[in-house]
Image (tube, rainbow, N blue to C red; front, side, top):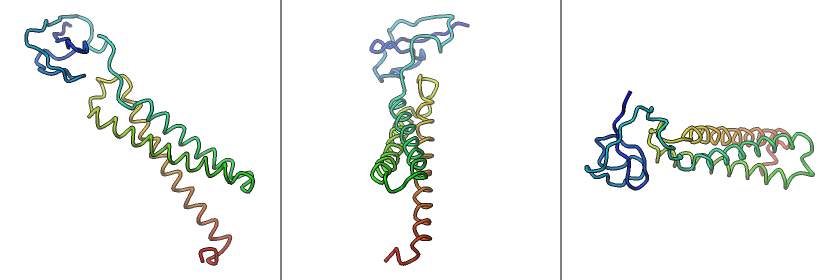
Length: 159
């Protein structure tokens, strides 16, 4: 199965023969540029570009969720001696989860549904999903903690 395509003179990306601009870098492709013919499947020709913010989104979301879960684990053992550490873990976890969600969302907006053109676009989706899971987990833990405090101290604790 042969395929006809144009190589971008700027980045070397493989483009459809009808493209006027490169799908990868936006550089103008001249009609006089050589057309290449190959029998190699299109996915195996050259490296695909990496999705923007794929790895940072995934890493931030994983670490954020891990910090939130670590805080929950420590809180079950000894609240008083770990107050500062727990606060750092808890708020650091939500911060990283939000950062992972934001980076993943920005990356998804830049990719615009062209997942097959990027080598690690799946990292964006996983980063966004884990970011949402971290934010929801943090919110539930805050709600549970607030309810526990209210039950312990009663309504006098609010005043």
